Image (cartoon, rainbow, N blue to C red; front, top):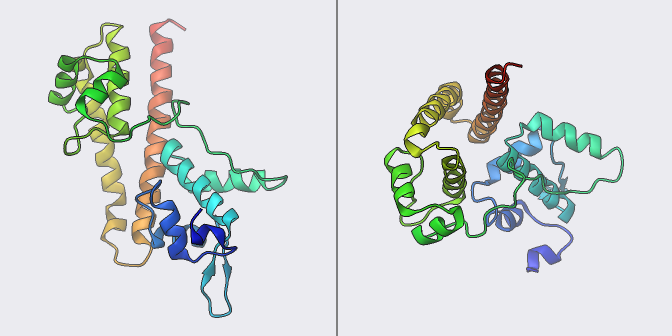
Length: 226
């Protein structure tokens, strides 16, 4: 345990250093935004500096995990925290959307991706040629692995990468909707604007996922005549 973690209180910079390994996008502005939204309440020194406890850090870790892995909007996370605090609150990490543990290497070589996803090189080449996934430099991240695994499972039903182009096109259109909606926030120069844009984008993504899932279920019921 580092020196910062061993002390009773930590500064905002020390909290940032503790969390950045797990949440590379976290910033001081993001932490201040979460405080302004009432999700965390660090103590203050007489001169106004924030003092974070280990409980504050775990609360932050819970919030950031819920945002990243489940795309939960802050209002929902806040409700969860308020409900839990009626009793003894225990911070347990939300499970990812597919209820599987996060993939073990986050940055994979091509061979590691093929082995982890259970697909062959030709399938990976097709996925890349249709724009369904791409390496970052020479490595593949966790999202690329999830896409490759899903494509491998779909192939068992006769659904090939070329059939998935419509899903890629639909996802691109949804991203364009999100980009259009948060454009005014991105143009702002005020402190906290970037954090608000991040939160809005995550909430919109979650809502679009919910809508897509509901529409898909309705369609499947129609196919089954129910």
